[in-house]
Amino acid sequence: MTRISVALLSMVLLLGAMAARAQLTIEITQGVDNPTAIAIAPFAWQGSGAATEDVAEVIQGDLTRSGQFDPVDRNDMLGRPSSEKEVFYRDWRAISAEYLLIGRVSGSDQMRIEFELFDVNRQAKVFEAVETGPASEARMLAHRVSDKVYERLTGIPGAFATRLLYVSVTRNPGGKDYYRLTLADSDGARPIVLLESREPVLAPNWSPNGEEIAYVSFETNRPAIFRQNLTTGKREQLTNFKGLNGSPAWSPDGNSMAMVLSKDGSPDIYIMDLNSKRLTRVTRHYAIDTEPAWMPDGKSLLFTSDRGGRPQIYRYDLRSGSTERVTYEGSYNARARVAQDGRNVVVVHQNKGRFHIAIHDLVTNRMQVLTSTELDESPSIAPNGSMVLYATKSGDRGILAAVSVDGGVKFRLPAREGDVREPAWSPYMSR
Amino acid sequence: MKHLPVAGKALTLLFTAAFLVACSGSDTKDDEDAAAAAASAAAAAQEAERAAAAQAAEAQRRLSDAAMEAGNIFYFDYDSSTLQPQAQAALDSHIELLKTNDQSVRLEGHTDERGTREYNMALGERRANSVRDYMVVNGIASYRIETVSYGEEQPIAYGSGESNWSQNRRVELK
Image (cartoon, rainbow over all chains, first blue to last red; front, side, top):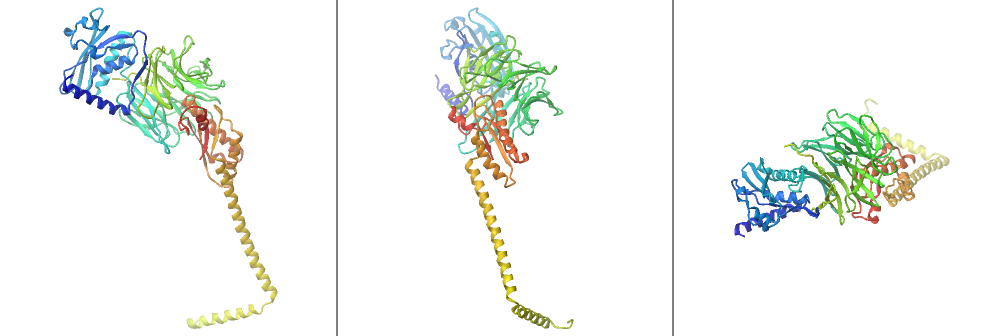
């Protein structure tokens, strides 16, 4: 190793350590049985000045996190090709790589990533593509490369170029805690604090185009629903009713928001038209009705109700006005989130006193428990329907963890300090 | 009188006063006794009033002490919003005190960490409402009571297990 690269490496480590304090790290706890071996050669930097991001490393992190890939260690690589003519398949067969990804990065303010994927066994190029965008969004461009490679090899669109919202709480013994609403990349990198408060912040939720968020804040000493534009920072308080103001859920068309209000007595589901601010009452029951979630077609809502004695998931049809019970398995099923396929529903499920994340198939009506950790809550499903992010406990601290919808892949996202909770996975971001 | 100098006016007043004093001095003993009785009655009344005020203050202080001693936190069973007998007794002290003043109160409902956050918001509200309803039935006007649920967001005891959870399932009167 040359002197320069040692200096560079230690700088990267130092920067990494500084960033790690504030952000989530990723620990894979369980992957698939036979992950695909892929070699991601360091991308050649052809721009002016020094490279700002190790694009190949970002891609490697993405594919590793999916649990479906087993990326080859860089140190085991027998060559560092960055163009097709430098690719010698025997070098990659020798280290049992099934696929090889190479690439070149160029540009200054505008960045250009060219990449090529090879099938080592067939000794053929699978595809090549280009991603371009502002250099300040280098990591996001790298995630887009991951999305394309993932889709080509698994048949499922990737969800790496997406973002997360989460709430973290720093305890302040003898005083009020600090609540922070944070926005980060899907790998936990580049955290940005959107709101800091001494009063509780909860229930973050995305607009369908990923440009706005909604959440509940107690900053007025009472719960109130706010919406906030991520680009302009513009913020608007939507509700200030007596009693509960909770569970904001943006409709799939972006025009209205389902929410929980108890202004008329017990907690019920309402829909607010976001232009006129007019409210329509959806449920009318003396029991607790809460946690509305839209079906992707916007025609019905799932919600939690204890009208049957214990909390279970119900479905309200907005056209017919009829309500039907959805879950029957177990004594407690709550806070549904629906995958884009409109079929898989993730819920918090209680079994033998423990709270786990379970997935309920609306077609077969089968339920499968996905997690084995304890006090699991707040499941949020990736826009490609592959992974579920949720909050759990590690010791007496709240952390985020993820599990694939088939239960085969698991990872944890511990933070250095504080309790982390209520993850909300973004939809696909408009470019 | 019009032309009398100021000193002359003063002199006239002085004579009048001397005459009045002489008259009173020549009054009967009965009158004297009546005056003394009236004075002492007034003093007694004043004393009684003072005693009553002191007594009221003492009563108020006792009510306040009792309310303080009863505590301002009322605990609940798991997934329940039913007031415990202990909580009712404690609340009674607060109700007695609130009947003697015109203060408003805020009831903050809380839950333990088990279950989902939004369901717990609703459960916390049920608990706060349960305390409110008890106070209203026992004579405190509902406009004096504000209820807010914090769900599981503000635990007293961090950590899991019943010993922590039982401290967090509560309504706080503020």
